[in-house]
Length: 289
Image (tube, rainbow, N blue to C red):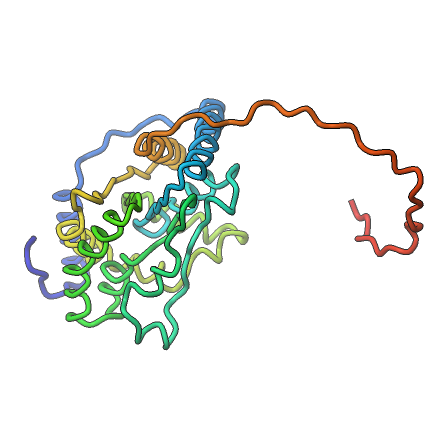
């Protein structure tokens, strides 16, 4: 990877960003939007398979970590929601850590993540992960050069250790074009229910597209290892990204259908001997609708 150059400003920076994008990303032909009916039918089918995978993970005592990284507004959260929608939160849980506390900043860097590693029969979805150090911390100057370089060298060792211990480690990078990211940012600004998704870091990332690209490329160069490779999801189409990611995830873990046989509910016991207290003694939520 080439050395970083002195930051540019104005038109020169825009031209540099355009050149970098064209050099790093292949031209993509416009694709038709996936029909909603087709998308929903396939999503339901995949979610049924996820339930089977969940039962297999629980039965076999597997320990699974799935990392979701990528650009801001790339659709990571949307995929995570679709994965967990029909699953048992005691088996499949989401971990999305806030910024480290003062105490955590003094710990071994991976320590606060290690506390959330799965036990037998669990799958953990990391909505951002220890790769914050190679991304936002690197670009925004939240870590020193020494801390950053140490991460690049120690991260592959840490991940190989996890895999040797029996953990299934899967890493996804959600790739979105600058045009599509900008469109999603604008949509969030216009929607009051989604405006909270635009953090100060998101807004700052708009002006640092090239820096984030360089950071991602160097991160891949060090951490795209055989034991835990990066899988890139083309996320310009949210529907396709969700289906492609879930389908791929299912393909990585061989599983069998352990769906329980249909259950016949037993008849209820006769409760005529018990007299319940009057409803007037209970406090109800107002019936407004």
